[in-house]
Length: 126
Image (cartoon, rainbow, N blue to C red; front, side):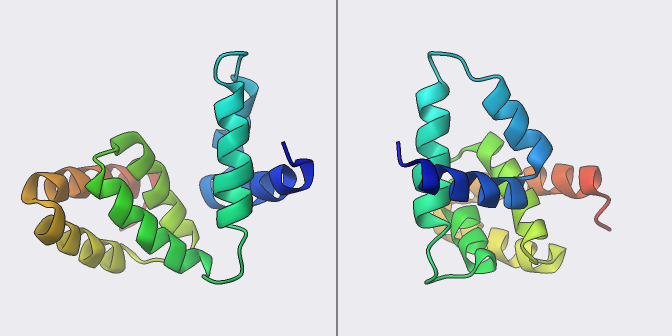
């Protein structure tokens, strides 16, 4: 594992998803899933999110689309919260989810809207 890339990824991951969530995920890792935590932090957050070619807001838009298409509700919830942190508005997220519904199917859109409402309620987004 590239320690420098891991540390960069850990910093970005905490900034986008929240330190409490990230630190809990890492602290609860065991011998079985620790390699996955390290892989995710190093390569997803360090190597990709740490690249200069796209800003975090744009990366959030891309992730909302991909994660919705893949039907990954737990990750979608995290990335909707991250998208808010990265400057997307409730209205912009709604537009992204409408486009998801057309291109990925109405069930994917309905699920994405349901998850987004949960995040908005938890975050106090009116």
